[in-house]
Image (cartoon, rainbow, N blue to C red; front, side):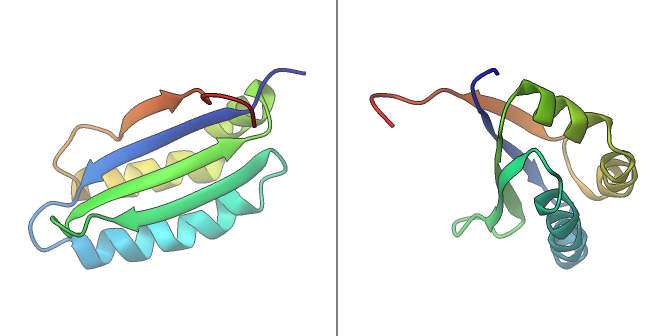
Length: 101
């Protein structure tokens, strides 16, 4: 079994779309949290810039993350999200733990 996969995704709602983006990501979070390989899917809005969103995600292993990427709900979510955000897609940053767990 591989190590857990941890990452955060960032994106910015276009002007006037933050409430729609929040509703969309809130619904999608429920779907992702039910995936067998998901450990955490936490959604935040930036205090200093409320149109900015950050999603912290953790998956049991690479297979769990791969299954998440291949799942149909993710494709549907991204198709709805893309026209509502400034960036061409979410910016992903993969993380590695420091020190003992």
